[in-house]
Length: 572
Image (tube, rainbow, N blue to C red):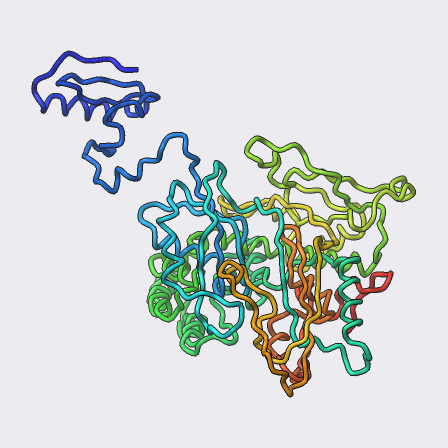
């Protein structure tokens, strides 16, 4: 375990030997002093040293707080807990937790939940104790599930447990949703609205829905994929301009700053690079002051261009990696949505020669990860005439690829649809291999055309107060709070609500599922015009939205499964 050196009386000499061991042999050995004699220990026995944990890496005594941070041997490294939140997204909620912890923080979760959802999810913290985050349960107001709390966000933590495995993105097995659809209006011509609603819910359960990527995949302004296209073209200036362009419904100050950026070179008489650098450097500094604190992309770009004007490629790399990858994944999503619409429009529910079907997954490694990054371990097969005659596969088995460098493409018209869309943007499949960003790649993946929700349940409720909570939240259940309904009957006409619960696999969108159930758009533009009372769609405008690039899935020329036996194009 250790060897002893001859006794050394002089303290300074012992100190020099300790420093020499820490500097030259720290990977292999460590040392302590016992009754004037230096003992050199093998590294694997350092935890048996009487002084283990009492000194830091440079030999200084640890403080009382630092001593407490030595993690007990044999104890699992990860504190697992449930994060409950209201009116805040997962990124902001976990950011609040991280900011309240001292030192280096390693927090993991399997998926992002948006701000509008009242959600519960598992998270893990590396080598932390419950008492370090339990304060989130004390200083903040309890949640209720209605909208009476305004803009107050609620964060709670609990169900603490130590585990050996960290929770990370990609580990998600599925999401459970419980959704209230209020003021359900089936039309005046329907005599029995409750029976009509029940029929729609049963059709949703039996048929499923086209597994589109939801609108939130493409950002608030539906332009995320356009930035990704410019990056695939290696047009970094175009990508920066796309991110910095003026956007609707922003604060006047921010809008003015974006216009200033767009017009920064207008007054220049020549194209002299040094002059342009000076103008852009000065403009970046001024515009930066008017960007909001949540505009991570814009702030990262301007901070870089303020120091290195005109270096758009470097500015792009200053955007956080997960946001940069989001732009490229949006391109994959647009292509997939476009391809599946054309495929359903052309063939409906039929399985065709050349379609891809997923047979299973390859064996996974010990850490739970697949042996192939692009296919994620999925095994696919190209269908032949013999497969069609055997009637072994149905549309629920068919997958379409997310474009990439490590996947196979269908051997039919769908492949041509994909190539045509890329060509329209000035791209080819080979461009997916030439991403000028060392940290990013597009391996590709496979995604099922049809998604069938599981564990579906639904009830039809009547209510009069438009803000009446109709399902209890997890926090209400913990606090043993019951839903309170008015005892006296209201003179107001009662409204119908459909309370539906279902489970979706990873990367399937509840907004798309609800769109199929309601046969109505789920875009924020449409939803903002609906009324909580009276005729639900009474205030709808007559504006017609476009359907560019196959991205918008709420308008015409889009495929859906309806409650009949066949699949058709929705021309509502």
